[in-house]
Every structure is written in structure tokens, then in C-alpha cells.
Image (tube, helix red, strand yellow):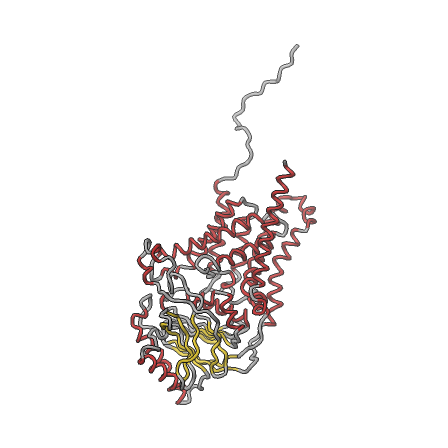
Length: 536
């Protein structure tokens, strides 16, 4: 007798298949990346919500953890767009959406490389550490490439207050940003591990013994503890007396790229505001300042070749009987255009100068002008300035003032060089009339506040149209003006000479943190190759 297999009645039930994620489930990481980008944007001024940044990286870490490289790249791009499109909206105020969106997309593409790298190291032990290093490596790349870099939007610049800020005095903006990102990824690791323990049920107690929860908790808490522990060492105390500083905000005839079409009016406004200060001094209403700071572009008439501009500035300096730092557009001896700060003595006239070293591409100069003209004729509105070559600290009535002109405040090395040059006080003269009432002014002011803590220096911010400010060495704002108003600030400012650890170490902390990220990537490569060989 031949055995036959039992017949199986057909079933209406579909054949079993491995579970597949639904379309909705596939969108969860994308939704997390969008939320992360928007939260990171919301952490920046004019809102002062620095605690949102770690939450942002917590969401992004959860979204990208364990993903393939392609998914990490895509999620990084989504984060970058959600973050940078609104953050950089001010770049399109007067030139329209095309340059703004092109810049945001280009920067987001660089951020997508961070997403790829974070996904790659996310399977390593202590992955938040390596992932935070990858993020800082990506920021280092953005600060240098292309066209000299565009560091705007570094995580550190969204931390002008809060528990992490004191870390800037130890390792500058790289360490400050690293601490924020590490805390956020630590939160992600805790959340993911907690979810895993929940799913494990009774086995969860055994899984706790592997130490990953404790490690994630340490990585989350360590930046917070370090920031709190460093806080007592951030000081506003004067180390070499004080200087009475006057900041002049003369205002402009109109906002936008053509604000300086009435160039004489801009100069006249700043002379007029300085003369008002002189009148108040003579009336005994205000004590005479030791020095006066005018903004960038406060004289777009070259005072070296225009006698009327020379005479007006000299009149203002003699009236207040104090040296003035004047922002001017000049033609150098070699015929090149320079964005220059001039130390103007009330008796001797113009003396020492500082030429802006890090120029703004597509604004103060136009890279590949003929190529970009294909897309927009607005490229011809960009200048043809030539950068300066060295740091210069002005000796203004015995006080060393380190000059950092506007856009330069975003670059670590430019600010650090001025402190190393002997600056006791930093000055960031700026012209933001181009950007109307946008968020640009508030974002730049936040940078200046971070720089104050990073180098332990008071930072003066004289601006053409607002917001001018006096920033203490601890990053707090002592005085400020409103937007698009003529105003003068006078303050007794501490002169400081000690160098913070961040100033002394220079680019060392950044190099170390970049090495952490690259080391994580190298380890991931080795593990992947070892795994393939063992499977063979």
C-alpha cells in the first residue's frame, strides 16, 4: 500500500508573508526628520529656546538610527531643508527667493552627508559619541567649503544662553555644538533602548545588564553636567580697568540693497548722532566716552579722497574729543576696493586701519560672476572687494579694540585672531540695513553673544540700523537699541586680558572632535568588512 499525503482543504486565508511596514510606517522617519529640522530652527533667535536643540537631535537620532546609507542621506537632506530654508529666509529679502532657496538647498546637501555618516555609525557601541563627532565634522566642512565656507546655522550659534553656553570658553563653538548634539543623540539612544526593553517584555531585565542604557544615560547627562560645572568660571570682572564706550547707530535713509544710494545721508546721520552725543556731554548729561564706535559702512564715501567726508568725520571726532572707529568703503593704494575700519583721531585724523578679511561671497564679491549671471542679473549688484590680510587691534585711548566686521563673526579663526592680537574688548561693526527687519540681525547678535563667552571678552555691536548692543563677557546683553532708529549707547565696559582655554587651544578642539567622527566612520568600515568576511 502506498502512503499518500493527506489532502489539505483550500483556505480563504492568504498565504503568510513576512510582515512589511506600511506606507505610514515608512513615513515616520521622514516625519521625525522634518520635526527635528523645524525644532532646530525654532531654537534660534529671535526666539531664545536653546533647549529645543537637544530635542531636535533626539528626534533626528531616532529617525536615522540603524538606517541604510541612502536613507541616512535622504533623512539628512530632509532635516537640512526643514531647518535651513526658514533659517536663511533673510537672504532673499531684497533679491527674491531664487538665491535664498539655492543657498538653503546647497547647505542642506552638505548636511545630508552628516545624515549618511550618522546612519553609518549608528550601529556602533556608544553610537551617540561617534554621531556627534560626524555632525561637527560636517559643520567644519560647511565652514570652509565652498567659496570659503558658510558657517551660518552652526548649532552653537543657537545657544546664546542656557546650560551648554559656558562650554564655549573651553573648546569654542565646536565643543559647544558637540555637547548639544551629543545630549540629543543620547536622548535618542535612551528612547530607542527603552522601546526595545518594552518590546522585550520579561527579557528586558536581562537586557539591562549589557550596560547600554547606563552608557546612553551618561552620554546624555555628561554635557549638561559639564556645562553647569563650567558656568562659575565665566566672569564679567574687569581685569585691566574699564573703558567708557559709545556706540553710534545713525540709521539709514531706507532699507534694502539700495540703502546706500544716498551715501552722504548715511554719513550725515552718523555725524548727526555723534554731535547729539557731544551736546549731551557738554551739558553734563552724559560722561565723556573714552572711545566711539561707528558701524560698518557708516561712511560709504571714501574719506581719503572726498574732503567733505574727511571734514565731517573730523568734526564729529573733535566734538566728542575721543577717537572714532569709522566703517568706510575705500579705494586702496593698489586701486582695489576695501571694506575698511579706520581709527580716526580727533587731532591727527585717520590712522590705523583694518580691512575686512573674510568677505561675503555673492555680496562683497562675486565668484564665477559670468556663470551665475546666467541665472540672475542680480549678480552684478555684488561688489568687487579685496580682502585684508591681517588682524589689527586698534589702540583707542589706551584700550585695545579687536575688530570683527559683520559676517566675519561667523568664522572662528577671524575672531580668535583679534583676541590673540591683544584685544581687550571686541567690536563687531555691522550693516544690516540690507536685510530689512528680518531674523538676520537677531541671529548675528546671538553669534556675538557666543563669541563673548568663547573668548571672555565684552563684545560691542555698533550697527547702522539695529540692533546695536553692548554684550557682557558672559554673553548677556547689557544694553541694546531698537530697529531702524537713530540711537546712542554709552556703557562702562570691562577690559579683559586673560585668554580662555578656547582662545589658547585655537582649532585644536575642532580637530579632536572631527577626529572622533572620522574615527567612528573608520571603525564602522572595519566592522562591516569583518562582518562580510565572517559571512563568507
